[in-house]
Amino acid sequence: MPNTRLETLKSMVELNPNDSFSRYGLAMEYRNTGDSEAAVQEFRALIAVDPGYAYAYFHGGQTLERLGRPDEARKLYRQGIEAAQRKGDRHAQSELQGALDLLG
Image 1: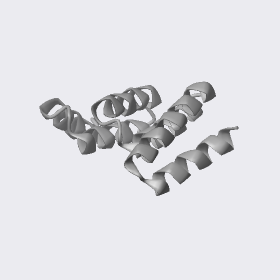
Image 2 (image 1 turned 180 degrees about the vertical axis):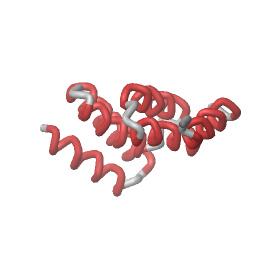
Image 3 (image 1 turned 60 degrees about the horizontal axis):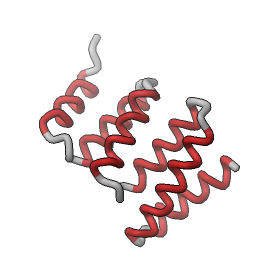
């Protein structure tokens, strides 16, 4: 049975590749269905379209951790901290810093 949600989100991104909400939804759906590599690619695509979308860095970093790529995760968390600082989003900054601290 095909994943209707995944197909719907892919279609939404195809129709509007610059829509941050659709890209985030697609990345999270890939992650939730276990396709971590595709999720990382979508989180990175989202960051390219919307560099201020702090939670793309957070969830992208977590996904990289799950893939056993801690150095890439650290880099993404650091970039996210900078993005959150630029936006003045202290909550996102704190969560990203916490994830970075836990990773060591």
